[in-house]
Length: 234
Ligand SMILES: Nc1ncnc2c1ncn2[C@@H]1O[C@H](COP(=O)(O)OP(=O)(O)OP(=O)(O)O)[C@@H](O)[C@H]1O
Ligand SMILES: [Mg+2]
Image (cartoon, rainbow, N blue to C red):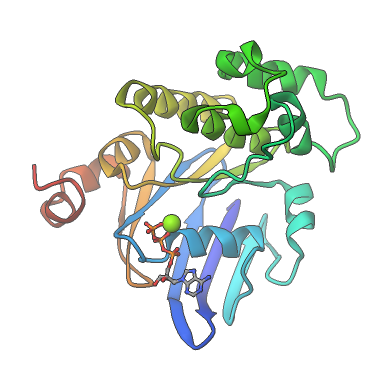
């Protein structure tokens, strides 16, 4: 098992955001978290990447308990995150933004940079443009590209399709599939449940800080409750 969360509880002040979530991600999988606004999806990803502390429970990576490991060490260990809201550095060029993802690495970066540019030709065309002047969708590509530059074993993606035009949404999901095919495990959070479930090996449905259902992605696509709640009822 590459990544395992065991009965985690997370609080913001006195408010419990996560009330005992357990989930597993196997090496090579795409796993999705779906659920309504406020269900705890982002918080779950932040707990895995070390941006939020646990109240109780455990995060295991490659079998080792990393619950207390600082975030930057988790990046080095192989946990890469593309955060919700993107976090692109506006005053740095596209290429400088991408290289920020690799600041913990000492090995050669050219091949990885080339791979990111192959996945996102738009970024290659505009590598000297300031991040802050890139469009919303382009900034989303930068955020994913920057996370890839950390050479993650598991890539945490928080709403990669958010704010994208329909054409670009289809493209982003294709790119996620391709990233996975090339060997990176993916834990994906998406409002766009239809598309996410289609490409996910497995998925978890979160409601108010708990897992209420888990199954192979395509199976959840046919689940009447899931259809009614997250797929617009059709
Ligand atoms: N910094 C914070 N301070 C206080 N409460 C927070 C904070 N961040 C999140 N919460 C609360 O924790 C709960 C889970 O939030 P979280 O962002 O994980 O949800 P989400 O599933 O990602 O939602 P969305 O789909 O809207 O992104 C929500 O009730 C939210 O209001
Ligand atoms: Mg969120």
